[in-house]
Image 1 (tube, rainbow, N blue to C red):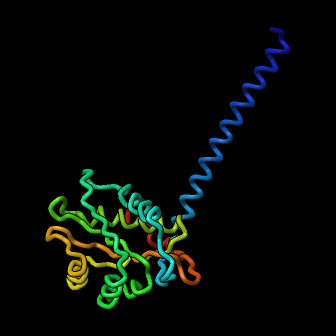
Image 2 (cartoon, helix red, strand yellow):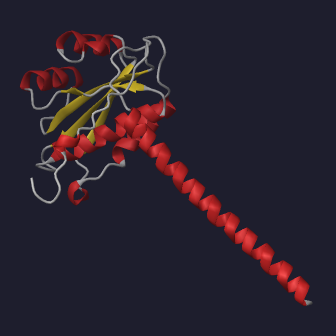
Length: 199
């Protein structure tokens, strides 16, 4: 092979390698930007298009996102109760003071914890809940965290309408659906809450 051919081959290989590196860097930037965009754009949606259901495929994706959360000692004490029965949603809306929007939501996910499996179930279930909220944002769905735990009356309402076993407690009810109206995320950044090395 001539010197000229070797030089051209070397240039071609370098071009391919550089192109691959550039593509990798571009993909990493895109991945980072996409993830941060979802985090910073998440908002609490409390009004829904009542007659527009969430597909079974999207529900499955939301549950998978919840189960991808971190869990202490990998105990995974969570359980996910899907409610799309209109009668149940309406009854819970009437009885839960912070979940009135269930009357409009086409569905809800109740994130529950097994208190026998883990004494800190509510921590793991909180991480799972946030994953579901972020997944909903990424899928152009609306969702909002409405607390059941640690309010005894709210937990009893959820348990009454869902027949949960004694060792399982509801952490949160998440109404989910397609947003009705426009919502904007809140800028919650507060430099005063940041401390370096010492408080």
